Image (cartoon, rainbow over all chains, first blue to last red; front, side, top):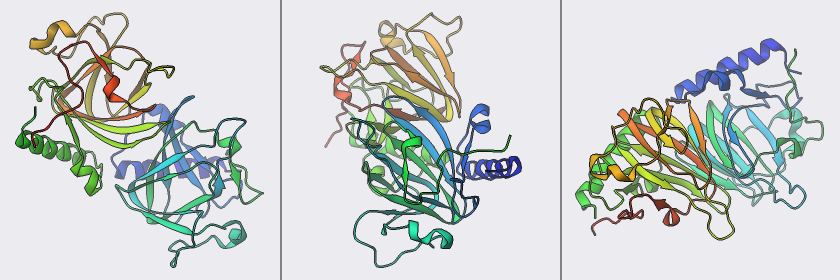
Length: 181
Length: 181
């Protein structure tokens, strides 16, 4: 569980990165920034901050904010009943992101795989995203991503987001964040 | 038809506004900026600049760029066969936008209605969008919008975009831009 103070600190750092990118949030959005430590209690290493602008029955738009070298652990978006898994387009706005997806392992891997969770990183086809670059991840495809040394902001455009159905390679992960009351 | 020079000038001004907002485009996106004068040949008054990041069978994401006081004429997104019309979320990133939709006429109208096309503006429920504000327009709903004095950038998140089916109140409008070769 994140302590209240960890949550407040992470929110401050998130607002700072957004400010660097010239991205403005409403007061309510600032209060509702999602800080996901995936239940691993090592937010700086494996974690992600999210702002959801809209998530309806058709489409979803978010900003993903990553601190320097922070990693979003490997996962996929499976089909839910007869609905295909989430398709998502990542567009880098600030900083640099190394995205890894299923496919041929790249000759060079620029990210550092989080040591304590090494066995839960299994796909190594690298896509480097700098501001103005984007990549669309098909449904039900394993992927993970890590920010470069300045952190990163990624706009995500996608089909409807139902994060509670995400499948993480690390079975100890809980996607939905819990913050101390 | 837009002359080649008008297109080049509009593209330059668009890149300048995007730059002010810290929004980076790829080289290809910079080349492919869409400049829509709607066939009215008064781009500064009635026109719109667009960058489409992604438009697939499920979702679409664009940046809309408006010059100072530029107006996107009144239109709606009708159903196409059995598919509902486009739903779109406008999120203001820079500047100010006055959006008008179906509903009760607002007591004060901040936009100036383009004089030569006055009869083709018929909905006057005003929504003011400043950076960080957003509004979702339901399918098949008449709307038009005008930038404030500094121009505006609006991120549009939506269902699939099929602009050629848009219905404009002004019957002389051609949505798909034509630029001199």
